[in-house]
Amino acid sequence: MKTIKQVSDLTGIREDYWGYTADLYLSNPTYIKVMDKKYGVGASKFMGDALNFYSQNEGKDTKENKGNNLMC
Image (cartoon, rainbow, N blue to C red; front, top):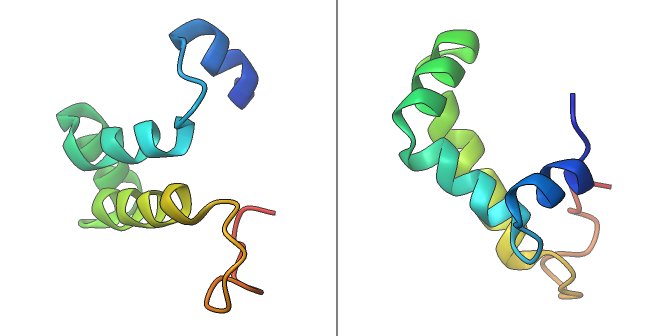
């Protein structure tokens, strides 16, 4: 398994790694097929939506976000 830094070095994705990953889970047929087969139908959409939420709220220090940092 590669680290985020290794993947970003290979792909050139640095700014929005989680947003990019979320997009793969939501729109790439191969990712969708593999994730849904491994974790159940709809898993890819769930993970893509969760990563989208995280990428859009990462680093925000809001009342709603306090204590909900899933990627510590």
